[in-house]
Image (cartoon, rainbow, N blue to C red; front, side, top):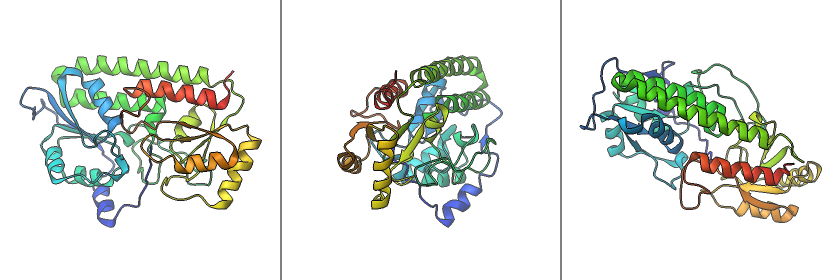
Length: 319
């Protein structure tokens, strides 16, 4: 994944702030059915949100993603047509502070149901220190998420918490199909619970607990399963690591039995391969699942996460 965390402009910040603490709102009556076929018309900001909307909504929703497959979500600048689509939809599902242009459009829209995934599970600050170690902890869902790590979907437990919140929002927006939304949510949460168990069991006994990535996208996953993520570039994959940082990584790799430098499917592997070559390490893919493309090691969230688990097991020397 490329977490191109950028500072919001003053205007964007003002627009985001306008959302206030109540980031989950919904209409009280039946859906306006903007699709014209009785389905709930949902706009999702990027793949992890699209996946939730489709799995929870099932046949009762029509989902449109603002981010096309293969497009870097953090670089998204939405078009006037997409802004109009948000305004005309029944619901928008997004992750606040990940895509500033989406935040701005949502803040100014009159869409009746606004679902901010960042308000549905606790967020933490990862990657603010060299090496990507967590700098703070916040157990208050719904608190201001600026400066926090947005990669909540890579932790199956947090993703399940978000799924539950999305399900409740769909039930409120479209009460006629509430039973189906509840059933679909429960099925998805069960799958995520099973995935969490596979990760927990699969990474319980490994030769090393440290893995190296091109940037800090896997802080929640590492924290969940007792691992340490060492990120070459912190939260900015575009920056070049300093010579001192490269030397630190090489020393750390030897001390912590690191075998692999991970890179992502949507960004260049140049930095990873250069450092791996200099340190005598291998390279492999650890996919942040920002989008599914032909390069993905799977066709959906679960299959790619299973591939991530296998890659981690191999790199860490699972026993």
